[in-house]
Image 1 (tube, rainbow, N blue to C red):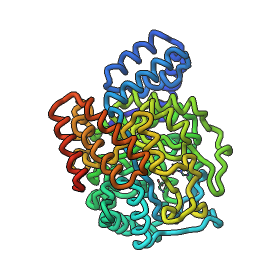
Image 2 (cartoon, helix red, strand yellow):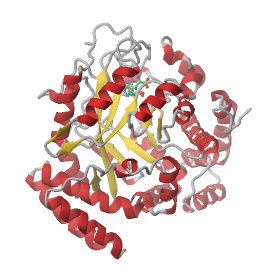
Image 3 (cartoon, protein in one colour):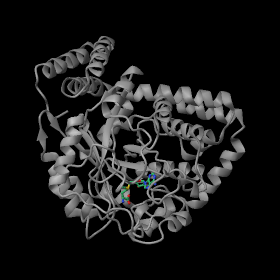
Image 4 (cartoon, rainbow, N blue to C red):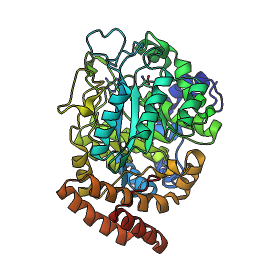
Length: 471
Ligand code: SAM
């Protein structure tokens, strides 16, 4: 029944294949020879199958885990250098007709305040985000065909892209809305979105149906096949994810990789990103009510295994996680993080973090500037770059540049340039001083003369006050 090339959810995420994978992983988790062979394959930086990666995830031999972590860190350096892409979520509306048991926006929740931003409110939110220094957003909305139809989402995207405030502009809008039709995906593509993100929540069909008892999201196949429709609609950058805590993490991990293999097999391009959210406390949600919560160590291991299994896929960590966990997984392969996030509708224009419309508790409450400074103090380059997508480097074009390592020649100078832009336009004095020193050091370390020249040229332009919308 298992067939990665099938377009049917139950064939490319075949339940029996996952069970067989877990059995295979259990059988081999202490077999040093098998584990060494898998690690050796991972060192080729061409990825692993869901079966191979599942063995690594099951293994708990301390020396082998250390090897895995070191390799994950090295692979990350090879593909992404020391750059970390920065983004923020923007909640448009928390109206929702679904019944998701883990989400406070579920329809039966009568005490959460319901809110949908007007276009003027979208404007105010975006100006607040631009004043922080953000260039890349992920828009979020509940599923509600009456309150949040596709026309509303498109209008918001249009508004967001139209706002030029001081030196600011949102240059990439990623979209996290419910599974929809090919026609609607085409409209999103035409509106100029970056990545279409949709979390599977769980790959386990029975659990999925239990956790989504009512509403359109109840339909497991329609949800699981959404990325194929998105690709058919012309969106070639898609973002996967599961909500860890709902089901057994090893089941989810195998499902996630099978989904990635399916996209590669059918569309010739794997997921652009993978997100790793964990269930958090929220208005009427207690994460302890879900049996499958994972500890921080397991979470870190999952991140490392994803990094070695799909080396060229970006990995995203949100402010659901605290500073300590974020720091740990940055070393293990995470390449994008959010900063200064508010998970409420209209939260960015409020002085204090508002709770009345929040989707979940944020564990990292630092400002964007604090996150940027923290990253730089650890030697990372916070990148606000959106150039790949603006220059048409999406889908398989991006992937082939990434796989060959050539992407570094674009990303490194662009990251330095957009960081410089941030430092000049938004940073606190101390952040600016740390950043300027880091940029000088990075510039010296660029091995290729031509790339160094490009970077110097970019930086000079920023110093002169020239802001280039393409980046
Ligand atoms: N309604 C859309 C959908 O159906 O995919 C948009 C997604 S929602 C705004 C973003 C994600 O937040 C969900 O896909 C879910 O994984 C996550 N989420 C929901 N409740 C959560 C909670 N209590 N803790 C952490 N993440 C949660």
